[in-house]
Length: 155
Image (tube, rainbow, N blue to C red; front, side):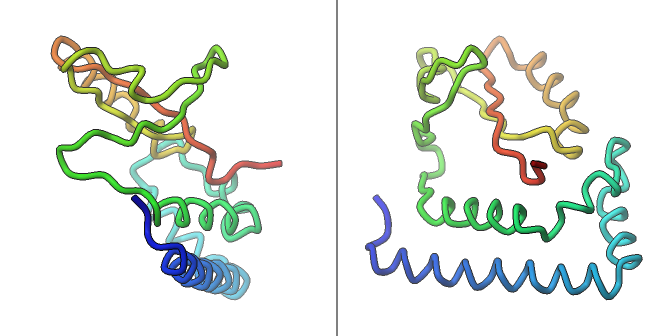
């Protein structure tokens, strides 16, 4: 059940304003204070040995970044679930190309643990932890990794 149509469009307009402002301010800071922005971003990712500022900097606050963040924020306006309730039965595509839904991976009453991510440094950095979680709980739960769209895709 979503918001009434007029309310949804007003919230989308507000999100558009927020994302546009964030990207504009970020771009201005990148131009005026490039070394300070780099220092801040590197500090935020200090614990991740796979993070490379030079690989990520060109996509920060770009047009692609704007559209990606806007799309994600708009989608979140309509996301609804209840604590302890079922996850939304979203469509997914298997590696084979076969289309199915998240609920297709559920087996009886076993919990299904969903891990959403993409090949970002932070996701890859914590992948070993997720593998240990699977090893520790595979006897009582099932696990599914759902690959999402790249936030900083090139091309």
